[in-house]
Image (cartoon, rainbow, N blue to C red; front, side):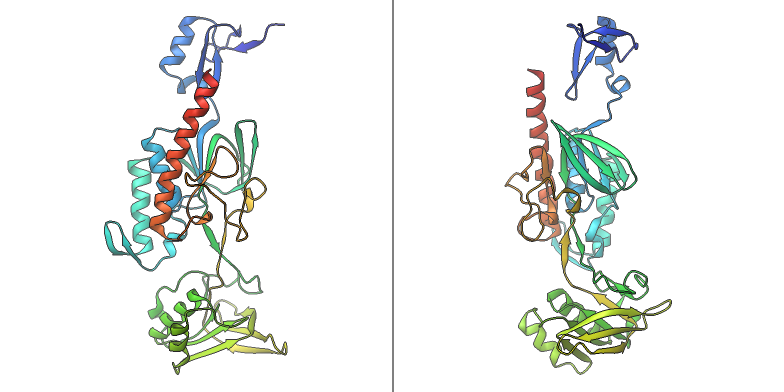
Length: 358
């Protein structure tokens, strides 16, 4: 039995004979040389192929740099991200980024956005990928908005997210005195009672910034402080600083703004209430890998394991930036890894198309 195909130009049914043209890894069949030539002259007008050569997941420094390079390399690309800028927008200061002695995260992200949207535009959707699977050489991506996208190749650049406490009041009072981000606008908190949760370097640094702004600070840590000893010693000698080790915050109180927290002793499980006007939660970061953890090799920290070319354990999937095990969680490193991932994806697509054409 002869296989039947539909001519993409005229819609006529035709047999799969010599009048064929391969476009983006897919074969198209034609009723005549005229229709074939019309397709060759303007394939985008007739292919109606929902599959992209490349989908980039994430639009922080790594994802945006990958997108700019994908544009330069003329790869048919879709960018899927919850926002443009990623975690970089929370940085209060960025030093020694090439071209800038000093800038802020929001200022740098604004330049990233302008370059991506106005100079190297690529199709993009503000959406979150919830799952990814592969069928032969095609990747299927499903999103929070119930959309499905297909790609020949994928770059994952989803970065990290701040770990949450998961306690009552945390979500309800977010941005109403509760923050998981770096300390900003400290001048608005001058003289206030503030709680910092987390005894690592980020928590201790946040406490120091708040002290410099004239706040009275209580630093709470479930275990013992893990930050640099010199920084911890500086805090302990400040009269406006109180440190509660072996304590846990179990609830945040307030109607429209933060008013207090409930603190529990890890020694005797007794609860106490502390009045405060803000809570800064600094308990670490976790990679955004929930949607791909069944497909890719992750390390014990949940980061995607990559090779020198940003390749992962699944052929055709590349990863870059803070979501990976690459050394150094820095904006400039993430950007460099994004460029590398795009170049690697281009090479992979070229090899794949050569194989299909044979």
